[in-house]
Image (cartoon, rainbow, N blue to C red; front, side, top):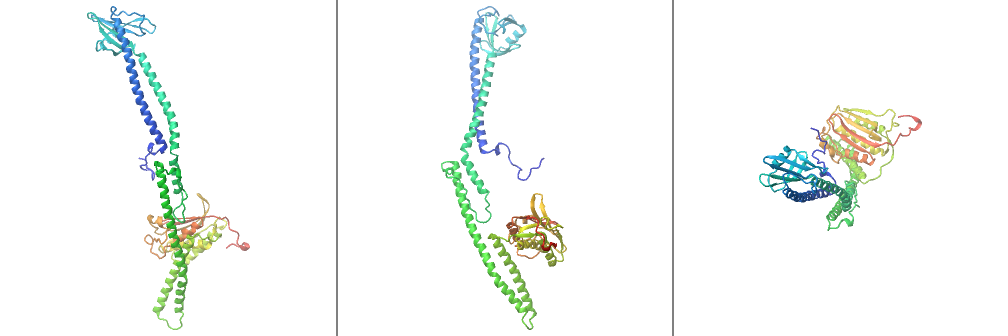
Length: 498
């Protein structure tokens, strides 16, 4: 059995998935075809009964004329082509009929006997098939003595008339359905235009990014399509009301986010001074002349450590607040290969128990590793990714940093890839990995951190027009940063390479 791709299993196909316009036209055509079929059948049956009644009257009249003559004699004058007369006398059957050339011809005795044997009643017309001649409408009359005389007329004219009627009815019905289908399509399309405008408004709103920032929804259903007396008008009015509620909710969310962002920025800015004072007083206590008790020194060390940790958190929050506010970043050529070299060197100094590998082009920066952006912010992105690999992997883990032009599906970009052979992270964490205060300690080795490193990396990369992705496959955990390339960097002063 063939496998269904994701999202396709169980999907219905055929008329059920046609557009509403096509379904309405098809439904009308089906109803018209059914009505035309009923009319055609009824009219054909009525015509058949009328033709048979007329033919039966002619057969009865011809039979009465036959009773005035002896035996099976048949006068050619005044008789229709194909008129048949069969008689039996003393068990012997004989027959005669008028050919298409208006000539009299004898019917073999065997055929005559077969005709008489198929007649079930006397004096009532019935249909009999005569071998070699076709279908006949015949009536039998009892003459004097044992003589039985049967007279019949062919059904060819009746059958031909019915065939022409059926063919004409079918042709007219098909032509009418074709014309009605075209006119119905035009009329239904015209009547569904208000619904199409409502759908266009909904599509325009659906294409508007609503996840962040100040959002305005200028799209509204036109007033002409909000008539409460029509079904489409009620839908349009309900959609306008929904959009108004959504716009109010988005405006309230934006005001709340702005207030929170301003509070975080102000609080972070204000906390920098007291934290600096705490660190200064802690260092001052250690420099006080004279003997300081060991427990006091230990306490001061903890105070300094926590003050540094709080300062790092405050700086991260302040940076995120600035990025959320959309403040412009510095724009200058930055060589990502050089940043990667510095970041790997710092990571090696911070965690010599890990194995750090750097893979950059030999001819960098001329190999397309230069971007235009904020060097300090991009340096922090690399530092955060390397710190994430350092903190959440056990000693002995190999961390490889690669800088290469992306090419392929993303020409004109450069990719920075940080990969480690650590334990990875679960798939359910991937959707919120770059959210603020998200920690992967449960998935990887326990570590410390504020949970803002990857959120900052994501915000900085997006501010530079790039993307960052993560793959938590155990043994090949990979973070990939893709940024627009700026072209080869200018040669260093004096022509000397670093």
